[in-house]
Length: 433
Picture 1: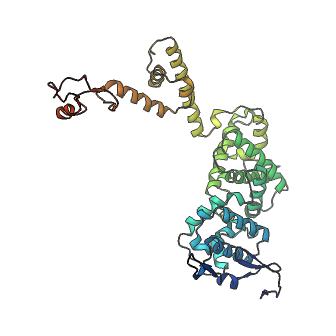
Picture 2: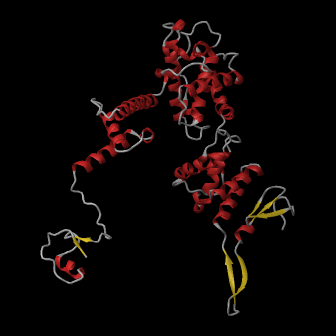
Picture 3: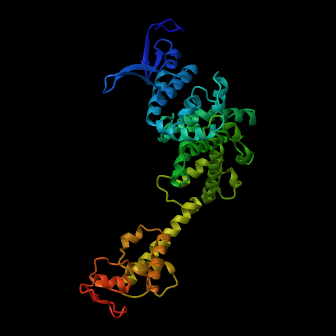
């Protein structure tokens, strides 16, 4: 077989798809005529024709190779994507292989085409594509594709990744707002300050249980504002950070849009404002929203490596959880003391009495420590219900030799009595066989 594109004979076949080793062209002829015929014999000796239809994986891999070659992706990237498809084959939509391949290309091609989204790849690809349900497919593949993204869970790697994404847009917007940008507005300076802000967010749990990239992107934006203002004499003349950035311009280079990064950005401003109010020599100098321009003083005062977490800086949901846990542990300690002293707690705390009741029923302190308050409440109500309603019948013991009138009727009992004598009084409960 000879490649029609470069006339090379170096053709390799993988997964029933022929590819030219020199130019990377996918030979469609071999794929289209993929049905194989083979002769087989049955037990009688008759021969019949067997048709092997192409597997779904092969169809998807064919389109991945074709799409990736069309957009000029390297062979190593194509091979990684093929392995990804083999691994997550059951989760991918094989009925729409072209759309799946284009979505994978949009996820991988961030570095090659920074401003391109999935619809840009669809317009550039000559094959007709159905866009119905495309968003749902994209969300599914994006979740599976996290193992092959450019950035990993390492913060330093993701910081470099986000700088590559948004730094050109940051400089572009800075030049629109300022006639002359600061000499400090350099990539390395922004990276160093952003890393300190990320450490600050980790210390006060802003990034806890959330994605890394929105927080890192917000830190880069604040670091850029700080570097632009660094060296200026009057902070009051600085532009307000609340309405400075055009966040919609970042959507083209962010996989999940700009909304999460915008939320983290304003959380950073709120955190820095609260930190600024704790700095004794900066109180009432400028408005709290301009605390982003006083990062050196905030970092010096807090000394994150040695500082204790201030309750006022924590996210409300974490603060409420810690406060509730402290109340629970206090009530458990009080209930344990009353249980050991064999004294019923005289308190208005419903939680303490519930814990005391569970300890009385045989639960241990270690078991109760791992329970949520709602679980404690459910167990307590179950115990009280059983105590107050003694009419609840237990399952009948079928192996019990004693026959009672709840098991069967008078006639049925007489059939199982050895002497076949009817029972005179059905109210007699204890009657042996």
